[in-house]
Structure formats: structure tokens, C-alpha cells
Image: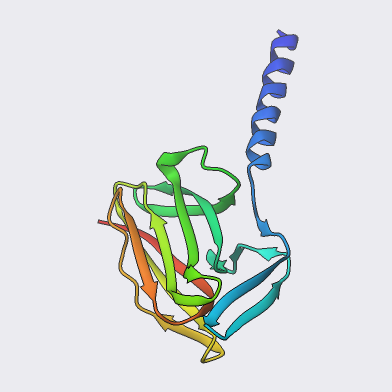
Length: 169
């Protein structure tokens, strides 16, 4: 009986360890390079930092893609965590943010969000505009249940912050 209990405890610890190994709380240092126009680029040394800040605020830079595992109960979001890979597609939101165009031409910025839930996904967004050199609230549409959405902007955006996550009918 005791050996069975030891085996069960060992298996539980391995499950917890496997879940922890899928965590991706921070981005690594990288150099962000954005095309501004045909004559200039913008460069920023992004330091190692958290993807999720404050009360579930996701900050992304162009070229980043994240998987957010969502724990929810009856549409109420209980927790959000950033993970390395999408092991649970039924509860993982996929988000990518990118500059459209090539290294010498800005055709705009695109945010893509894949919503795996049976409910619509609502969120708020702020963008850090290069030309304004400050954060500005922007309008975004909810992501319909079991669909993906694409939001685009013509401006050069250095970073985007997504918050106020909610699952709604």
C-alpha cells in the first residue's frame, strides 16, 4: 500500500513539473527592428521581460507570438498564463503581432488572435505609436467564438498591450 502511495505521489510531482516546464513567463533579450519608411528603420534593444504584467496585461512587440492558457469557469476567467507550446488547444489563445511588409517598407501592423472558446473573447488594447512616442488606447473588436480575428493599423507600432480579458456571450 505504501509503495502505491509513493508511486502516485511521484507521478503527481512529474505532472506538476511537466506543466511548469511549459511555462514561458519571459521573453529573451532581442533587438527589434522596424521599417519606418524606405529611408529609415527604428531599432530598440528589448530586454528580458515578462509577457504578462500587472493584472493580466499582455505586452507584445512586433514579431512575437504567444500562447495564453486560460483557466475559466462558466465564462469567468480565473487565470491566464503564458506557455511555450499549445498543449491544450481547447483553452489556449494564440496571439501574434507583426509588421506587414518587408525590411524597407512599412505596410502596417497586424494583430492576430485565435479564440478557441465557445464564447466571444473581449479585450482592450493600447498601442505605443512611434510617431507619438506614447501609449494610446485603440479600438478593437471582440473575437467571435471559435474564430480568429485580425486587427490592422497603418502606423508603426513599437508595442501593444492587451488587457481586460473577458469571455462573453
